[in-house]
Image (cartoon, rainbow, N blue to C red; front, side):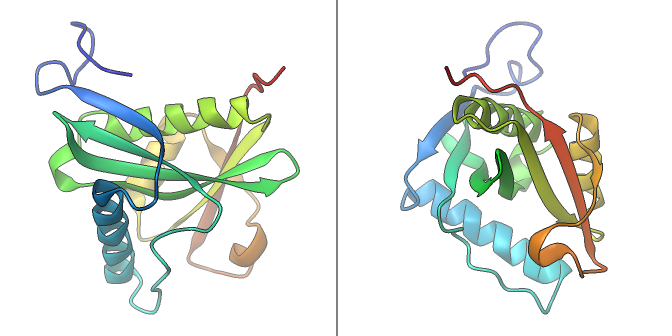
Length: 164
């Protein structure tokens, strides 16, 4: 997924690629996940999750070859995938990179036979909430560990399964 055509807003400011199924030890991914958790900890001081989510597949967005964004896909059963650790570094923001990461994740979810993707984000992340709504996610009931959290907002979206 490399940009470059005239309709692509990234074309004027650099070449963006989305690498799928990135090894969790990839240096760019490690740096992005560390920055993601640092951002979460600033917004939610009592929350310090592990950067790497067990069982997740990762995607890295690269701008001119440099990692600027990441997202993970975790299978949570019942035909559902969950978005984890969505993050775009300040150097990559306002370029459509987050939406491209979500699209790549949704395509992979469909390839794996998932029929929906869900996510949890927090009330102190208005930019994340705006992104998810903009790319077609709708509010759902809180699920799993988020069910009792007043700081959580959960969203979901149906995705077409492309597994044959």
